[in-house]
Length: 138
Image (tube, rainbow, N blue to C red; front, side, top):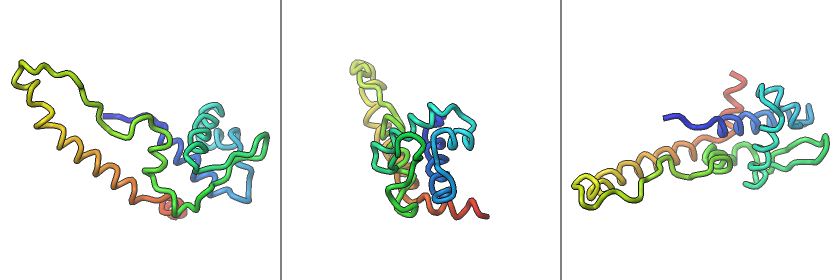
């Protein structure tokens, strides 16, 4: 299974904002240079991060800044800000109740998928932006 690149891009953006705070204006063009992507992708991601209350964006060449301390931003918050769904799995809603597999699929599978989803969420909640910043210096 493969996820989109939205979350890694968002984390990269947040790390740049934290790392270059007070040194450079972290504009979409500046951030796009670090990411190697079009500034439009950065602006779209920043918009989602702003809506989630993680960044402030100053129009023009003001750049972006964090609204929370890096130690207070979990990767789950970032994931939730930029991904459309908060669940890893999309369940099929209409299995055939006349089929023994269709009739029982949710009973046998859903609890396992939910467990994986819960573990994923818990792991991301336990990783903060500050720990990634600290690792950058290593």
